[in-house]
Length: 424
Image (cartoon, rainbow, N blue to C red; front, side, top):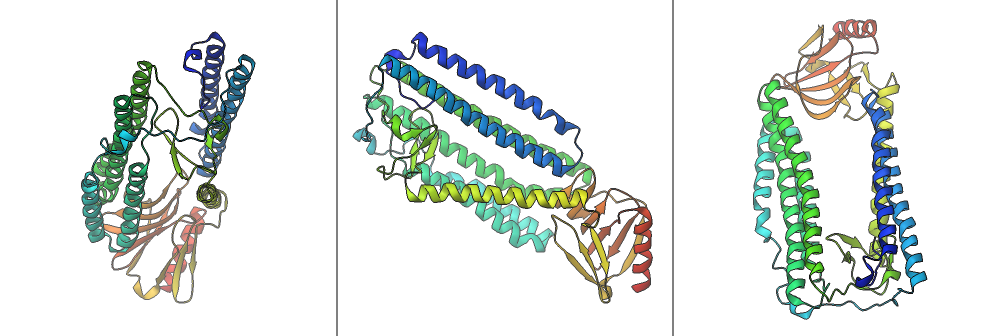
């Protein structure tokens, strides 16, 4: 709970009462939040599911923070009553022996080479199959790898932590901490770098096999997330085991600067600081740049939620959101969450009215119970879908691309087909 207690008081009955109450509260809150998520199994509108999920996320974060604040106050009350409080200390304790080669446990930078090669290979393969996606996929791959490599650099620059007066223990703890974080960043970069190749492979094979490929990747992603949690658990157990056998545990006692899980110390020049116990890293919001980073993060998250939520609402509940406009010289297809396409009549080779939408593979789009939008591959051709889940379906074919559209009803779709047939 990021509140410092004397080592000899950790097993005090007064402390254990607070600890066990905190654990019970966390378990109860977790069960209630899981139960609150069950309605999402029956909600068929993505916009409502999205809002419900975001509300649960906010409630989960708020509940966790509120419980932390509540029990930190309870523990502080115990410390006050028993006279266990320590004076604030601005001193940053560093074992100078650790400054000699502080990154022994860190994986070398060339460990990112497989991820880079996979990303470049997947980008080249996908670019050959879908040239229009080359720039987007390339920028996405570069940005993703840059994030992981940047985080690796942050860990590399962290000063070593001195949790005890024993240099050997400090060295083992720092090596374990840096090894775990660097391994997670390298593994994360590798898992993400598989996406361009996975998409290219899905497009080049039969839809049935493509589903197996996608499910296989989702399994890899799930296993990676499970491994991340396991590695943090193992790191914490390693730290607890090391500290349990030392009599010289010396965490910094600056409780004043650790306010409810947030480090706020304007006198500390560090931007990124390790937590006093545990393998995590925090931002020092006492520094101006720390405030800027926190503010930008909140702004970006709020912007994404508003933009994505509003577009999903339009697609679910605005009957005119998915539209086809037959103009004088061209056909305009529009829908939320996907690009607007303009198709000149002179480029249209064929118009068909199909009984149902052919099977295909999604490249970059949305597929829900009520609609399919965006870029797909149907057969061996690029296809852009503006389709509600009703029939029949209009198919517009150009030399290289197919477009699929349905109106709000069967009669509207047939009327649109007749108009297009007369104009082409």
